[in-house]
Length: 156
Image (cartoon, rainbow, N blue to C red):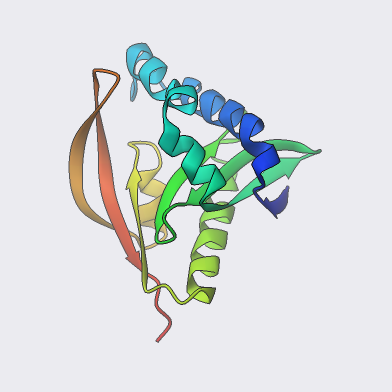
């Protein structure tokens, strides 16, 4: 796997990774209706585009194909964190999370926050993130639960 910074040219491929990532989720956790509502955000949500064009992010490639990515937008928030289905649970998330945290430390940030899905929150917990609260949100008239999380990353 190769790690590199996201560029504007990656936008369409990142949308495809996002869509694949969500559509690959276990239906015991997110049903088909939820997956349809959530995955449509790649095309329907201007905040998705802002996170890529105005945020700072990294992606992983394998044989030149983008397999996972993560962004910070604004700079102290992990906004997007996705991996293609067939590459999930193979270390991509950990590699991206380490990179995001390391870059934030280098920029002098004291902490990071995110809203983690029922899938990703365990990875964040494993990496010493804390749950602030569980929240319910609505995407395209469909209810979702997620976790507001934070991590102090300041170097003492």
